[in-house]
Length: 327
Image 1 (spheres, helix red, strand yellow):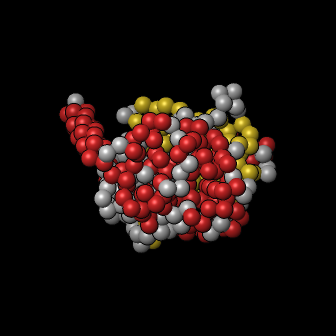
Image 2 (tube, one colour):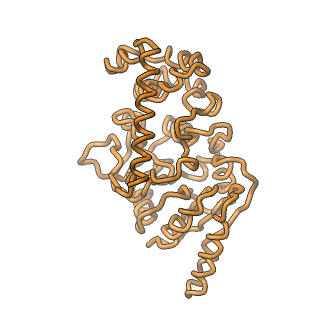
């Protein structure tokens, strides 16, 4: 029923746990496709060693469940897209190489699909793992909500916490291909871009049970967000949504979400001299009357004060991280 896609690039410290969480699922009708995106560490060796050990331990069917696709490094979007092209089942489940699943994840997602068959995008809530501690992601659904169709934009806008996480999502393969998958040019937010395209046209179903673990304890050099660095505007989703302008104008929930994300995401780009013009262009689209007063004050404050404050906060954060490392 499921084709599970793991894009892999230099995640030697995490990939075995991710694969193990898939192979230990209580629901067994799946294939696992690991797309090795030109890893330069020993990630591939770890996978091969783990699979051999499984076979030698008596799990002779492990090779039937797992395929490895090797490609030159072209980025996570192409890795996922190529994995889907090779998939043989109707539903695609994605898992990042440094995250992992609860053993009943696929079984629960199967139940969600059967209960809400009109959806094209399915997700479960998830844990955020930081400093070894897990907390349930504050998705903007009511506490009594258990499962059902959601207004994706309205739920997202409540807390700006992703209702659909790339490691806790299942999508119809047919819909994925109709939407042409992930955009390879985007280096940040390629998942947001795809999920929003689907959510604006089709139904989204959510299971409010945390069944995936989104790992924040990853080496800074391997995080999606590059420390204090900034992606170029042409690589960042927030600068590349003009094609959805008509939807933004007619969909109030979508407009609310986009404005909140612009205000939240664009601040470092606004402070940076090289990207300020691009950031201002995006911020001009915001309905400021509907933004919190603290944000209106922040963006109207003198740049020199904002830059000084930002520098102090970044320095304090760096010192805090060093102290944690020493301790």
